[in-house]
Length: 313
Image (cartoon, rainbow, N blue to C red; front, side, top):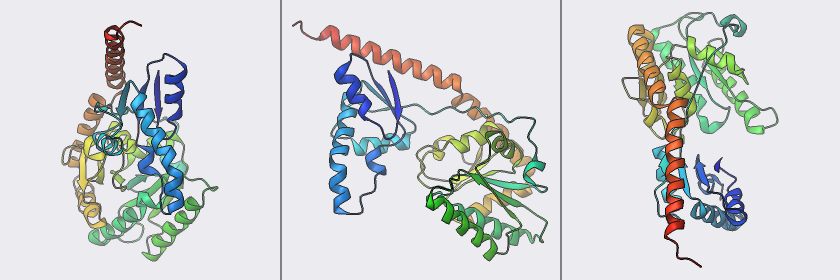
């Protein structure tokens, strides 16, 4: 049995206590490292959950993580509970845009950079807006000319942070006098998202210490280069200078790479082609299936050997 979760670890305990199933746990990031602990009460509240999560890791027959970055975090979180190092298995991607979608449906008439993320402060979307403003100044672009920025992604009106941060970003664009050069597209369809990726100059991925980051991989699969922060999962998917650029996360650093993509379209095309090759080779579903099958077979063999070596009752 394969359990893939980043918060619900109790099924592992239930499966091991009430069945003879072999459990492979796919951890996207340890829940104990995501939980807030600002107060003493919250720290006390988390104690039993942290212990149960560690116990679940101890019971798992095999553990998989989505990146080397998560592997390091996992070992730090559960060093007292596990002896075997978790295996890294990168998620796969398959991005295909519908031919029925077109850029007219989102009112884009100029070349643009793209950012796709949830409208949350930790995604640092303000960095993309500030970078666009600085790039337009560097290019001496007049209103209605030069690059645009499309901010697309998850938005839920029921979540207060989504609503307030969305308005904060709009006010920032107005304050920088580029409200007509920034297009906000909350909750776009999968087809439009993929179509935007195909037609963007490049993808701006602004979060830091992202556990893996599937969006850069989707962009690479569609032959578009990515500019991302040089921390976390993107360091494992993007090859700096070959499939995109890894920068220190400041708007100024993004601007330098954006300027290169904007002015050197031949370089941009080359980066996109190399990114697609890398995505198809290392992050395809076929590669994921093959590697997962190896892990399952190894886990089964290890469990069989353990049972054979156990003394009879």
